[in-house]
Length: 466
Image (cartoon, rainbow, N blue to C red; front, side, top):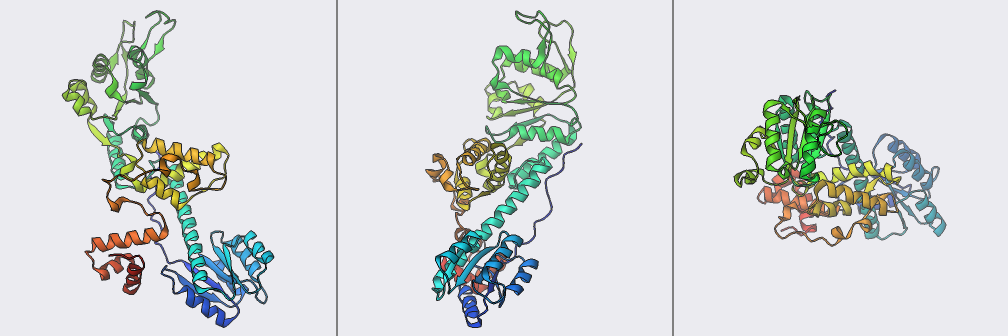
């Protein structure tokens, strides 16, 4: 059965979030709307004068932040809060009241309110609280989107990521799998070379037969030959029965030889013989074993240099290198880090019995800034460690290992590649980037960003963009 392709359904175009203001006093309602519209953040405001109409709106529309009076005739703010929590769990609720006591404030927070403000309120305070609530909603929806995408990738059996580098790898995998040809896979340790080999196997005509992997660097020279080719009973001291080699085990399927650059020249000669003739002699045997195996090889070093230095047989190199696939290191595809982080979060929370479902923006930013010398394998290990360390349902910066907390971005890395660490940083980052790409043409930049020119001007001023 051919594995499913990676998800290709386009995600819905992003829309401006909606803020719902529910206040029975007309003057207070209009004042709240005026205050909110002074925010530099982009959103739409909808107003209701009673809780019942607000419930009807929440039931059929997506609401990012609900700003509600606590005391209203009929349905009060607490009832509306509970309704919003049950029908739209991501909606953040800010209560506004002139009758607050410690008890009512605590009750609202216990029911799930994000925060509350007292009448008469400070306008800047209300605006800041609502902006923070909106940021939390945007974080929650982004977390939800990432979880959804990683689940689609996981269910499809695909490599996880959406970077251009990984897309190139996918195209080469598709091409190689259609023609049952030898492939040399290049990449640093931990970047997923074996996953690439498995995808070639699963998409090719040998998918119903075995995939066998061997790390040539992990087995001593005096044992690797018997591991690959097997032996007969009595071939050497201790050989008390016949043993099939991995070539025989993988016959009809695929044999993946990782770190093949570690193979000795003598072993390379025997590998060349198998690839040429499709047969070999197990240790101690007098008759050959015939096999039909697709051999995929991988290395974490420039194999061509080893050929030039006569440390790797040129004929074997050309036999194996019908196609080449270079797997980019994780530091060159930072846009894949969030998806991978959520994949590993989902993979290990059940095993570790920890109800962790979110990763904070600050943690994602730290992960994206890190250079990842251990690549995807290191990322998986760090996510596992953070799951073990956290006491909440979200991975936050207090669980980051020292290597990430104390990290320093390398001087040679361009500013454009640094990920933003907050929603304001994200917005400023994309405005700067778009202005550079349009050579300072603000009208064109506003059109690309999907905002009007006056809004762009206000944001340029707010973020002090040159």
